[in-house]
Length: 266
Length: 75
Image (cartoon, rainbow over all chains, first blue to last red):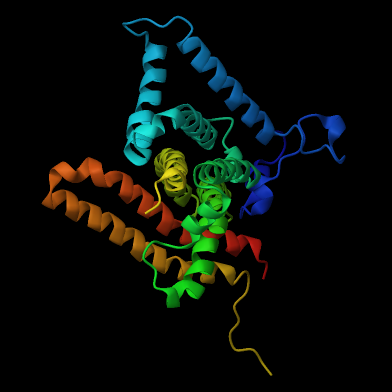
């Protein structure tokens, strides 16, 4: 933080390099373990710890008239159970409520790191984390489908839509197979990743662009930096909306996929 | 041969701009349909909200594919 202020705008224009972080343990730099302890992984551990502690503390001593923490935890759980599980899966869906609530809270918290000061980047802007979450969803809905309908029953159900004419089967089967068994987890992961990636990039463009304008040679350009920073503030609120929406959408789509797996055959 | 005009930098950004047209229209249609449904039958708002978000998420995925590919493919 010493010397020329130009160092702040050194990253402008931002690129994929803006998402690389050095190891927090200096000894591990330039070794194979360099990515083990970075800002990103630290944020994930913080999110995990915060969630576990929050829910344990909130429900350590449950009261009939809830305390504030208990009320927050209960309304979160209630919102997912009634708004997602019951709504999408039906009465059977209540048994998935604990997992879906955890999923929602974890994604929401890791997304919110994108605009929380000092964190300022969401771990989900690295494809690895959304990919793992999508793989869990994938395994869950395929396992439920196979458990309910048997391997071939599930395969038939997910590749042949009811009422398809026989002549259309050669076209429909590959399309439905790719759609239901390959694209679903890919889009799930890419949607979350790309939203967080783009969100971080937009904030970088406006904030670092403001710095670059502020340090411009042409003094007429300097006041424009204020406009850039004002836009950055507006985009931060927009990001908040996107982050909540994406956490909700991920949970909702997971519920939809589970529902399509355990639905009765038509 | 002398060059009269040239595009420099990444052409991917133009590709992404074009790729975003379709999903842009699609997301607009999804929300328009939801508003129309709610205006015609206000009590169905809660019922159709889940489907609106589902449709929105599926349509939006296409635009995001464009964004990711714009970064993933060099050139």
